[in-house]
Image (cartoon, rainbow, N blue to C red; front, side, top):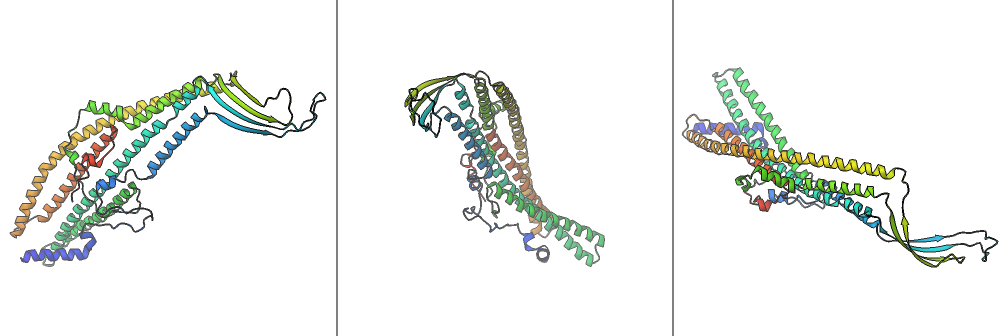
Length: 448
């Protein structure tokens, strides 16, 4: 009992030295500065609740939406070129009448109402309309939504790992303090030299610095999570570690995963749409010097009426450009180069997707082996701690503190592997065009 009371006394002195905020797990309160129209994040924050924010307005999604809207406006602009155009022309004109004119007045003003519509341009308008890249932008928007989910998952896991790292470093610091405190007592009894005491004090101060650094990492990780949720300044103090059923997921064949990624990857679909659009643009450019047929209907009112001025007329207008001064040839060359560029970008992106699938497939295989290693290590750490605790209760020399620190270190390493596995599967799903769904993946089931 005396030994146990002595240890408790040393821990109390350590708490006074290091401060209660260093002994306990660092809890960072949310910032009070919040925008008036934002709803506070739930406390504690779960991964499902965080992912539910993925489709809320975020600068990256706003940028992609703006690009999508611009592509839609461009398509409507092209389609409008073939629509009917109605114009009103008022002409105030004074003339000196010819001596042969029957009407000798000087007022030759007129008012014309003209309806004009392009009837046929031999495929140019159709090619330009098909070249509008709205479909490609829709796929880019889906890819942005996937990346938002991946970022939120990664930032959420970073916070949990930062908390575990703090617990580990704090446990190690506690042990180094107890060793230093015990050494000071032995030094007072002249059982230990000054240099050995100073060495242990140096180790304690080093571990104390590590704890301060990991505490800062906790805050930085929470700030990054808040930014990924588009809630800058709203730092969540308590996060709930999710269950990860995906850990039991069985990997598929590499060839099948690669084929699925090449076929369904939203970024590749967007780039294929852009290649198709560039091809249509080239087709439209080649038709740039082709004929155009317009239909016109005109109603007019004249101040001076002559035999050649009709109040109502209709007709077909056939336009055939004879020379463009090289403008058409230049446009064709520019669009041919654009098509070659986009084809090359697509080929490069397909290579990158192939490599990314392979990298993730190999990473998942390696993580599976490491998880099996952690299962074996976990059993050893638990038994080691039980033995150290039993020896401590019997007041036999024990390394209980070291055993506790090693167990926390094991939990940190285990979490790193599990979170890496979950993220690898999520990235693989994103590559194959599947939107990350916390309900479908089981990540809505949370545990403390």
